[in-house]
Length: 68
Image (cartoon, rainbow, N blue to C red):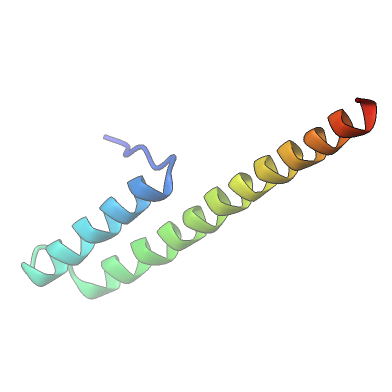
């Protein structure tokens, strides 16, 4: 089953899950490293999207001020 990784919180929870599995010997470090790299890429993408949304909101606010 695919995990939902739509927010920073989702990614952090999954990273914590991976760490727990490595500590318990349920996952090898190579697999954990691969998953961590993928999750870091997803996290960067999520943060970039958030920044773009914030910038759009600021730009819209600026347009509204000019029109007022």
